Length: 412
Ligand code: MG
Image (tube, rainbow, N blue to C red):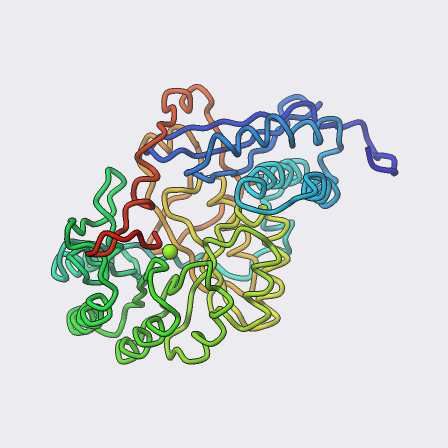
C-alpha cells in the first residue's frame, strides 16, 4: 500500500480478464471491480497472437498488486506494475498493464460523471477523421472498393492490392480477409517496388485529388528500398506511407524519413515506452502509429502524445480488428483531445461485436466520435462474450506466412 492515506474507503476488490472473439480475432479485456456497488472499469489488453499469456500475466501476477488499492492512484499503480516485474516492457506485460490502466481511467470517468476525454483536458476538435482499408485482388477491384467507401463519406482510404507483388501484404489469404497473394509467387520486394506506383497512378486518375490516400508496406523493405518507394510515390501525394521497415531496424528510420518526400507513419509494433520516445526524439516518424495497449495503455500514451505535439509529430493510431472496442474508445479520448491528432485507423465491427460490447463506436461520414457517457461509454456483456470463445490458430496465420519466391521467410 502507498505511504499516504486515502480520502475515502473506495478500494479495488477484484480484477478479472475476459478473452472473447466475436469476429474470430481474440480480444482481451480486463475488468477492475471496486467496493462501490456497480462501479467497475474496463480496459483493453489485446495482444491477439499471445492472448493467453496476457491473461495469465493479469490474473496471476498483476491483478493481486491492484486489489486493495484506491482506484484513483492511477500513476502510482501503473508505475508499481511496471517496476514490479524488474524485467519490464514488451507487448505481453504492457498489454497487461494497459488492461489495468484503462480500467482505472474508466473508473475515474465514471466517478467524475465525465467522459475520459474531459479528464484529459476536453475536446480540441469536433470529430475524429478516420481512414479505412480498400483492398482487392486487382487494381480495378481495389479502386472500386475505394469508390464505395468514398460514397459512404470517407475522405481517407488506404489502398492495397493482393495480386502477386502489387502493393500487397503478400500473405496467403485467411479467414481474416487479407488479400490473396498465392504461393508460389511469394513476396517479391523488387517486383513490389516496380508495380506499386501503378496502383497510385491509377488511383489519382480515377479518384482525383479530393481524397487522402495511404499505403501500408507492412515492414518488408530495407531502409534503402523504403526511400526508393517513397520517391517513386511522390507524384501521387500520399498522406502517409506506413510501416516501411521492420521494428528490428527502427534505428534507421531517421535517415529514411529525412530522404522520404512522403510522410512516414510507423510505430504499431512498438512494445515499449522508451522505444517510442526514441522514435519521436530522433526524428524517425511523422505520424505515430501506436497500438496503445502495447506501450502500456492511456497513461504512457498521453505522455507520448504530449511529446509528439511539442515536436510536430502527429498521431495515426493503429486500430483494425485486433483491438477491442474499449481500446477504440481509449484511442478516441486521446484523438479528440490532443492537438497532435493526425488520423485514426478504423474498423467496422460485426453485429456480434456490438452485442458483446454495447456502445461500440460507429463510423459516421468518415468520422468517429467518442461517447459522452461517463468513462469510456463502452460496456462488456459477459454472457454474450462467453458465446465467442477464442481459437488458437487463424489469427496468427497471416503474420507467419510471408515468404519470398525462393521460400525464405520474410517480415509479416
Ligand atoms: Mg500497419
